[in-house]
Image (tube, rainbow, N blue to C red; front, side):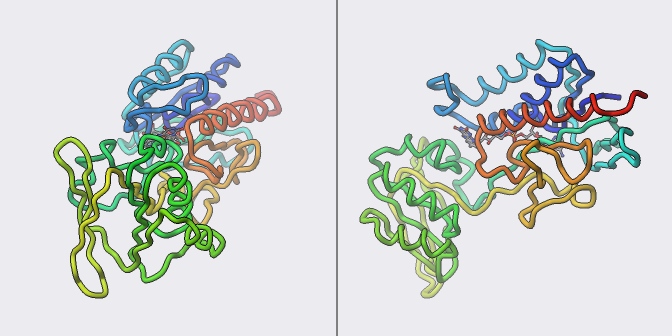
Length: 310
Ligand code: FAD
């Protein structure tokens, strides 16, 4: 059994493991895919103190740094169930999909999130070649170009406002007959000269020239007509889904399925902490996830040293 058992091996989990191991306590990390979302990222330009790096490079640096310490890495292990300890200071159990189980006196959940995809032809093919999901990350790559934002909720409208200051033109495409974002955001969006809003529109495909995105097609849901838009980038903003389905019965989740944490990273169950994109933390970014993972590990250590000696 572990003193600190980390579930998830992205930036949050790696930071948590390093901070825990540096306290000299028995630490393990179980991850479905060590590296997490970073593995799916091309250029990273906001990892502070590193002007520019690539996702796979950062992912292998994360793993190498964790391996500097005495941490047991269990890669390709998917957690399926969390059974919290019955008594304070007892072991929490993580049941893996393969039936095996792991025990930790504290657990740090850092299972991240995934962007909801449109599921249209061309989306997968042109991912990182014009199809993007994170305006904070990839917005500057489209400086002076034309982009679309798919989705008229708060994140889509925020993305459109953000991008309008960087790119030449933004087309916002919403499936519904009206935008769902807060009124103040909608007013701000409507005031921008280089934004066009199209409602009742279903995106049907991503067009490209084999190398990068050249446009998209959508269907006008009122008239059934098909339209093409020429552009260089598409930001898909139809939801970020936390990887927490397996935790529903064990700990408190927000209505969006995010793990509820306090400022120390503690969940609704004593001794179980969480960090990164799977939690209610406001912004989902690498440096933020790393900071949160470090916080969770220090809180887990604090919890352990206060337990009565066993
Ligand atoms: P993740 O990175 O999502 O890691 C989650 C970990 O948990 C993975 O190891 C996963 O396999 C594992 N896991 C999930 N479910 C289970 C389970 N049931 N059992 C066991 N393990 C499980 N951020 C930036 O700061 N800059 C950027 O330039 C940037 N670009 C991005 C580009 C793309 C295409 C994407 C998708 C994201 C980008 N982000 C960027 C966001 C950034 O990647 C995330 O904020 C960050 O990776 C979150 O870290 P995390 O550790 O919380 O979660």
